[in-house]
Image (tube, rainbow, N blue to C red):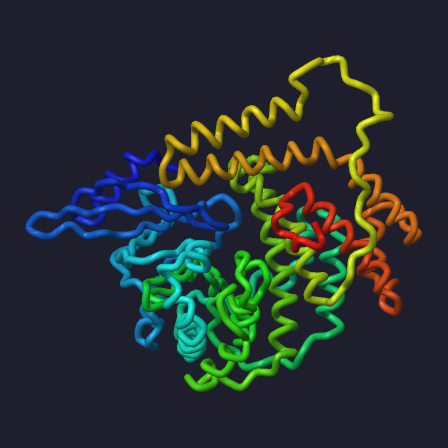
Length: 451
């Protein structure tokens, strides 16, 4: 069924809930869900502040996720995990996609505010221990008690998805090869949240108030949740290994004290690397939804340029020092286009400034967020117009020095094990290319000495 307009969704949702839906507005959009807030007015009752989560329904969302998530939320509540109460759900009905309504908990979810603003300093000091206790409680949920819970992580083999997309990403091939050669002993099978991280926490001044977004849950190794929380992608610029706010020592201590198993750092490190490769593939999958035409979205398109962030994180986790950077862009020696001014870069700059100074200032909520994403996408284009040629040339020279013709050939050689006994030069070359890509995609992601 096609996606409905906002007013149609509000009317249909009100009919399901026995009231009138007011002020339905989008809060965010993720890999598989769009989250909106609204008020429900019902006869003889006080207005209720609620949250609607709707599957996108068009980028590989699996059927049965909403009933599974409802069952998980109820089981998590019984286990002592802070979660919002379920109000209602629908599968394949007149809203146009599977949906779930939960009570709205008050607090903050934006990671950069939680990690930086003074009002959340108390929360930051409490979050690590609270996360350890919450994870220990989640891992007590019997996977067999949750109908529809996947028996394994659907992205446990990320390379199969890259193969399906036709992507040649040698850095991710190297990461997957490392994972295969360093796999730890399998832990007990428990219920894994699958996306336990800052951004999916509802935080108050006292700390953790709610664990959100359970649609990626599955049966797996408990170390997977810990490695995901400690992955570099989910630190959002914070200094703590745990979500940007805490230490792994404290997290593992609180987890064990709450009944979780004792866990070695090396095992967590393997899952950090796994999380980093997996997140890179998820970024590619989301971008493919836009590129294929299934869901045209500037947000999904822009996330495709975040793959290089994960590649950089991968080499940081593996302790790889990058090779030489691309040279500074050369302003002479290139043919001059006959278009005059404004140049392509100046036109992009003008549109970006319009989005920043006008559209973002006049917008709120989801519209403001999407305008910010569009502005950032244009900034990427600006930088690529300046640096792109030099980055491409430097990457080609690195491939030549390795005796490789192109990325596809390098990816195939890594997968075949051709560099197993001498992977360091390959890793250094790919780390340098990841850094060069970040100079275009997101220079702020690099530490000052590397930018």
